[in-house]
Length: 166
View 1 (cartoon, rainbow, N blue to C red):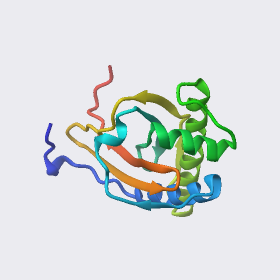
View 2 (cartoon, rainbow, N blue to C red; view 1 turned 135 degrees about the vertical axis):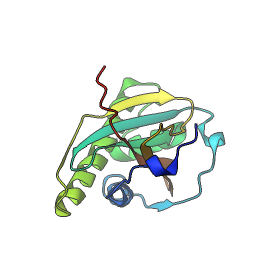
View 3 (cartoon, rainbow, N blue to C red; view 1 turned 60 degrees about the vertical axis):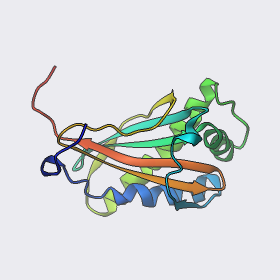
View 4 (tube, rainbow, N blue to C red; view 1 turned 120 degrees about the horizontal axis):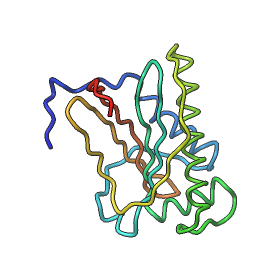
């Protein structure tokens, strides 16, 4: 579905997510992250872990982290210090905690900018691809990163409320 640019919303301060990814990967996983070209769907053939955290307050977003299977395994091991099987419940806990640390760092950056927000607990899913679908009046960013741990994506999704409550 195409989106009319006139209805796009701005994503102020979304650069905080890219900055936080680089810092968290260095401090929590001893790895460097650099922005890279999206390699496309071939890296998703074995599946992907997606973690999402809502950011609510002066900005209203959802932050996501998408990790192909191999990256999820190496990142979880680097973060936790031991091997975690991709298909285990522990994988969801590990990637959820990585995402929680990422969102906490974003919150700190935003606090320093005078932007007040709260964050939700993470939701973690295993899926077979990663494409950000957005409706009218919504916007998203998606950044691909490369690191010693593998390729991964992060970004922000936000939309305007239609005023309809179900």
